[in-house]
Length: 67
Image (cartoon, rainbow, N blue to C red; front, side, top):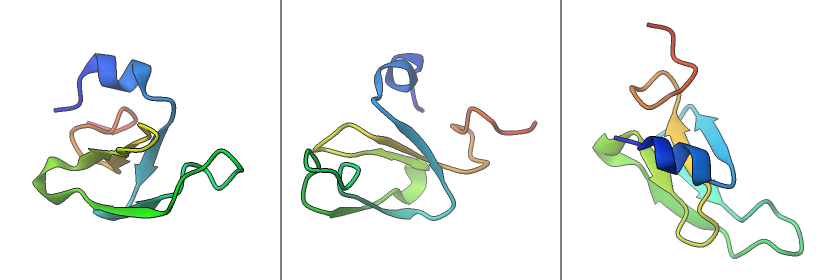
């Protein structure tokens, strides 16, 4: 489960519609090499380079999920 601390400290939280995501740090000059992550059963993943948090849309971790 994504903790409140992770949600508040992540530099960016992205809600995505696929379990497989790519991150390049934003593509600016301060970015990083593109890496791919698979969420698996977790329904979220954090980039190991830049700490961006990717959350699967409508999962239990989605802060905007309608109950």
